[in-house]
Amino acid sequence: MPHGVCPPAQEQLTESAAELHVRKSGFPPGPPRRTGVELEWLLIDPNDPAHPLSPPRLAAAADAVRLLPLRSALTVEPGGQLELSSPPAASLMRCVDAVDADLRLVRGRLRPLGLALAGYGLNPWQSPRRVVHSPRYAAMEAHFDRGGSAGRFMMAGTASTQICLDSGEREPGPLGQGRRWQLAHLLGAVLTATFANSPLQMGSPTGLRSTRQAVWAALDAGLAPAGAFADPAAAWAAHALDAPVMFIRTEQAPWITPRGLTFREWLRGTVPGLHPGLDDLDCHLSTLFPPVRPRGYLELRMIDAQPGADGWVVPLAVTATLFDDPAAAETAYRAVKQLAERAGTGPAPRNPLWRAAVRHGLADPELREVAEVCFRAALEALPRRGASPAVREAVARFADRYVARGRCPADDLLDTWKEQHP
Image (cartoon, rainbow, N blue to C red; front, side, top):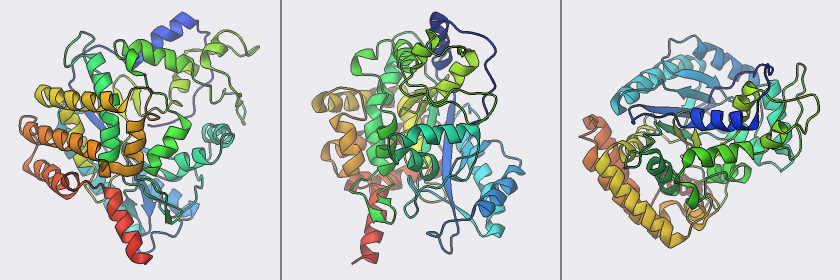
């Protein structure tokens, strides 16, 4: 999610115009055609991964990577994490190939610097430390600090694998926006559990498989309730306008960080002399971080960063296939809908299903059962989606190693920790 410094507002905005803008920008019409992925990585010294890197060393690494001819957009996150955001791709394999090529370039540039990319959902060793200084990040930090330490851990210590998929047609049907919006929310708990990879914080187990998702949930649990799935654009617009404003930009830093001001209230003139414009609304939308975020496409944000050089390929391949292959989508939808009905409804990730995913991963028997159904459907559909033999083999290996055994990558980290702390 590339973040620049938002420009000052230039025109006023009405409440009705704001709602229309949120609806249209979040859910443009069109059939599902494109696939994308955003990969966040921690930077480490592979010879001493637990040792924090100095800000100058992090800055030098970022400067070196910026010189590369990458097809993906490069962002440096507040704690020095590197993020690669792929260009929209016409197929799964085009996305995989483009990002894989970029990652090879990045790793090749980091290697002579004695650095490497590390796939953890949350930094397992260190306290959060912001090394990127800008008015935006300073304001975000001030806003989050009012509620405790979760905001700092989110900004400077987390990393994820974010899957980006078209929101779909506005008409009803298996490829319609309502169905894909609902599938994203219902499948989210299964994806969280399957790819959980953040059980450690400050060197010790937290009791959770996805501590990263727990951190994010503490900051923004803004997912549409079950009754809002019929009109996802309306649900998102209501959520966005009623969400707190994180900051109000000013010509000079520090920016204003209001307490308890929603964007709707700001539109209604509650801040004398500072009426929001369209660019303020776009900036506000960039500060909302629900696990499913509409940005002209659906950005699925609930998956931890994955271990290994190509661990990210499996969640991308499985998730994209479960959405874009009609038969796999129908199988996944039926499975997750039945699971959600048994577990109870309500805004995730506060409902029992999401809490079980965060705490237990696939050790939860119901989540494991649905994950097995989804992986079988994905493996059957991957050849139809043009997936390479290497991608199909990677998905099959993950299914055998983790899903069939009720495990997730977090369990490997916990096993290693237990070996080191008998």
